Image (cartoon, rainbow, N blue to C red; front, side, top):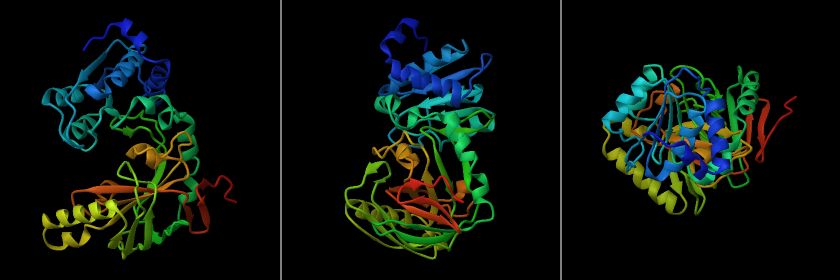
Length: 339
């Protein structure tokens, strides 16, 4: 799709400024590179802004619009899948996520670096986590690397009732700072979190989700009791009922020992993005500075062995988190001085 440059006058300066940050800071697009922007009818204004920002860097830019999917993970139309394999730099600004599709996987395998912004809205481009200085954010996150070496025991508490301990079973991931400059790399925006996979069977205690659940503001705290890394009890409001239904539905489609792993505690992380806030958007909520989140279900993506066909996440407010002798968070504040 070719866009007349006069269209740029209809794009707000705030959205264009954020789009330039995505192209120049996050993607680090070069003049000689092919760049593909994928959008859908609901996000076309954002797609156009990103197109305009990329066109300031390279004339090898193409924008395509696809139908809005009915769920995240649905494959895009085959012509778009083919285009993704032919471009080295890709920005996906769509309502539903393409991260867990074969099209994205094949493009990454072929060396494309991809910035994905599922659920992005006009408001998110004007204020919030998208407007962060991702260069500075990545530097701050990377500077914390030494804290996580050789420390394994995590304890998370909140005044709302969370009290859970576990061991880490894999390395901490410190790459979600919003920089996507290596072939094959994929970056979700807004970015800004540090996360890890709890060691399987090691988690015991209680998790109380009081911020958001799967990108929806929580209506009543969702309480999950955990024993040996698995959910043993769920209580709360509508979210609890829905989650129980999902687990039962997933169990009905599994065989053997996999049924027992459906309630697996798969992921723990905390937000570092000071421009983000809990707004009911899955990505922005998880990166909000001083919050923490837990994920349940699959842990394959983090190097684990559980594959049960789903992964759901919930965000909690004002947590305190310790890693061995180090306090990472104190009632919703990221601890800067850890001496």
